[in-house]
Amino acid sequence: MNGLDLLGPDQRGLYIGGAWREAEGGERLDVIDPADGSVLTDVADGSVNDAVDALDAAVAAQAAWARTPPRERGEILRTAFSLITDRADQFAHLMSLEMGKTVAEARGEVGYGVEFFRWYAEEAVRIHGRWMQAPAGGSRLLTIKKPVGPCLFITPWNFPLAMGTRKIGPAIAAGCTMVVKPASQTPLTMLALAGVLAEAGLPDGVLNVVTTTRHGEFSQTLQADDRLRKVSFTGSTGVGKVLVRQSADQLQRLSMELGGNAPFLVFEDADVDAAVDGAMIAKMRNMGEACTAANRFLVHRSVAQEFAEKLGQRMGGLTLGRGQDEGVDVGPLIDEKAVESVSQLVTDAIHDGATVVTGGQAPDGPGYFYPPTVLLDVPVESEINVQEIFGPVAPISTFETEEEAIQQANDTEYGLASYVYTRDLARTIRIAESLDFGMIGINSGLISNPAAPFGGVKASGFGREGGFEGIEEYLETTYVALPAG
Ligand code: NAP
Image 1: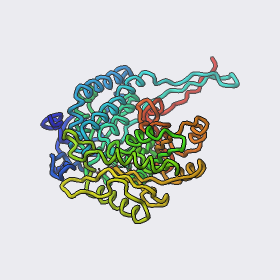
Image 2: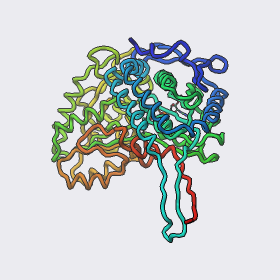
Image 3: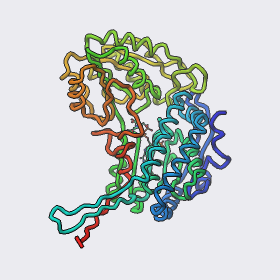
Image 4: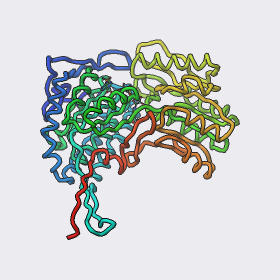
């Protein structure tokens, strides 16, 4: 089994209006294996006309889909949940192949990603408005929730399944139709997912998938179309800003899940071993290629040496290799550019005065590998603390006081995830109220949960995915004023 067997003979094409087809002009794009740089396979490279066809299909399907009983929409999601769960190993292999993460890690993503289908299968039947008496008593106020309408979803390469299900699940539950553009580096998982949703009974045109390298023209054209009512994007802050600007003329609803620069705070009263366990998850999940990845370790000076040594030992003991091989803990990064960018940040941090506890040097190719790396005494102003690293590097800086720790943690344009290790309850409350982040993990390196509202503030974007909040992103409220009778 290598996961490619999930895709039928036509399933490397575009999926539009319930049919698989070639791109206009028969254009294809290569999918690269990041473990050795070879071509794995290719998929259709959609044109702008293909994108418009996909929106036409979504628009045509919208009215009937909105009228479909909530239970039916929920059952489709529940069936897809079961089908994907049954094929979890195949999905994990496919993701590992195109993205590089280990199969074990990819299995974790399948388990996480598919839960958005189960959660929103359950939420589909709980969409409701309200009925109330007007305060002055003269009339009645009724609210009705309606699907926002055809949506555009653009997803990144780092979580090829979960970044899709977090949008597709609530959109299906709410009764929206959609055009999905997966990252051109990892299109295969989304194509496999489209096949499963069709098998689960999703009507033609509700979900349309266009793989393309023409991302600029693609989003400009679709966002200029007043039939498109919503854009949900997960990716970099720079691209998010472009999409926000492009939404202005049509005033599309937006959800923006953008970059992060998560601080990982370890106080002097923390259980250092537990903090190291949490750091391994917060840093090494997805080889550090996660928006929630701990980016800056801010550790109280009195425990910094112990924390660095213990983390260095754990990180240095991990095995680098092809994600599908037995015994491998850390796969390759996504591409050559990613390795260069991580290498540069590490070189600059060392130049700024950091010392290397473990790692710090990319091995020779083939493949886009970077070893788990721990750096100590990194000046807080070093570039590695400012940018998203998106690789397996843990820079450790120190602080003396709680105020200093909070100030350093908040000193970033981003505001997605943050992590705090302390055993002091009063401090926990003070810190949770002081950190400018959408999510805070207390004594835990893993915060993502389909039942929780995932999202950020500041340059990390706006809108929430998951939880009760996630479905609201796909609903409009109509208010009906009624006479008292
Ligand atoms: P990216 O370069 O912004 O790409 C994300 C997606 O946007 C890809 O599908 C890409 O297409 C597409 N894209 C690029 N330019 C576009 C344009 N002008 N119009 C329409 N689509 C466009 O980000 P990435 O490097 O793939 O992903 C890493 C980033 O995502 C990091 O910053 C990370 O923090 C963030 N992220 C955030 C979350 C969250 O929930 N907050 C979760 C995961 C990742 P191509 O593939 O064709 O380039």
